[in-house]
Amino acid sequence: MNVNKIRLIHFRNFWDVSLDFHSSLNVFIGNNAQGKTNIIESIYTLLRGASYRSKDDCNLINWKEKKSYLLGEVRKDNKECFQINILIQNIDQQDHLSPKTKKVIKVNKKYQKKSWLLQRFNPVIFTPEDLQIVKSSPTVRRKFLDEVIINLNPIYDQYLKDYNRILFQRNILLKNEKKVGNLIKQLSIWDEKIVELGTLIILYRIKTLQLLNQKVKSLHQMMTENKETLKLKYNSNVLTSFTEDKEEISRILKQKINNAQGRDFKLKVTTVGPHRDDYFIINNKIDLGIYGSQGQQRTAVLALKMAELEILQEKENEYPPLLLDDVMSELDLERRRFLMQLIIEKPMQTFITNINPDDLTQLKSIKDSKVFRVRNGQVEGNEQ
Ligand SMILES: Nc1ncnc2c1ncn2[C@@H]1O[C@H](COP(=O)(O)OP(=O)(O)O)[C@@H](O)[C@H]1O
Ligand SMILES: [Mg+2]
Image (cartoon, rainbow, N blue to C red):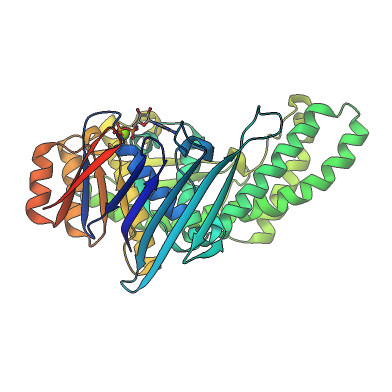
């Protein structure tokens, strides 16, 4: 899959910039705060209908403007071509206090929902924030796993959103309802939904962790010369032993939620459910999150990201685009070499920012590439 071109109009610090990408390697160079990350973000947003780093679409619009356009051309399987057109617009509310953002997505001139994009395009993005996956909070680990699941099963995005919405309502109820009788009655309505959606989420997580495990083990062994073995272990808030039996998961979740009712009333928050899930990242039986060195933790993250790429390649029969923002400069020599090898060997379109001059020279000597110089919202591109 390739992003052939993109045009950014009033997107972040860009006024109106058109970029023709190389089908192999695209490198963005320039000083800090010039717009390199914004370009990576624009490519991601074009393919996914939303940014990875800002929940609020209004942040994508240039500060001086009220609307922003992203126009792009994407090719799949070397044949199907899609013209994607995304409009993000601020609509002033009557009170002028809370601007609302409207988003319109068109593909080949037809209106489409974000889910249309999610079902077709799944870029793999790797940023310094990902380097924290191992040692960071469960939220960050869940986000990585959930992204892999959404890429594989776009419907999961909806399950997750619905679950979080219902969870939010349930927590509001726990906070506000003072009469226990009323609370119990109302909770029974929410809990049915929580169990239904929660079961699906747990099931997808179990299956996807297994899939990641199959891939990650060999990738990680390759990176550690067979000295270390990496394994992901589901640390479920609900299950103690793992089953793929939906009825069984549902039964246990229901029971645990019922048993936690007293605690939930007291703490005024939902204490049981997949929103509290986590997974251990284990290397030779050691929990890397607690005992891993920074090098081991980063090797594990690299293996995880590579596994994500391989899983998506198998699903689509072609590599997704790889977006690397600022990660090269964060890795030491050994791990950079693995990433370089990956970029060189795999037939995938790659977008990289912040790469050191030696690595760039090496990459350019092996791979066809285009280097873009980004300066204060202006971009110059040269084919190499
Ligand atoms: N909505 C926006 N409108 C205008 N400028 C923005 C907007 N969002 C971010 N910027 C600016 O874009 C600049 C470039 O950011 P970035 O792409 O992160 O730089 P870098 O080249 O270091 O990756 C920053 O100076 C930031 O203030
Ligand atoms: Mg940046």
